[in-house]
Figure 1 (cartoon, rainbow, N blue to C red):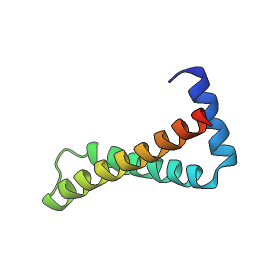
Figure 2: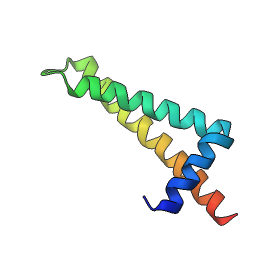
Figure 3: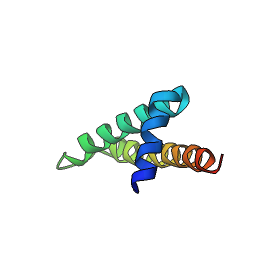
Length: 74
C-alpha cells in the first residue's frame, strides 16, 4: 500500500461512516478467521463458517477498494 493509499484510507476512516463500518466489519471477520485458524481441528460447520467468512471478508475488501478508487479519481 503506497503512502497516498494509506493516507486516503485513514481519511476515509475518519470522514466516511460507511467506509468505517465496512472496515470494522472486515476487521471483525479477520479476527474470527484467526480464531478458527488457531484451532487444531475444525468441525464441518466451522469449515463452512470459515469459507463463508472468507467470502464475506473479500467482498468487504472489494467494497473498500472501490471506495478508495472512486475517491482517488474524484
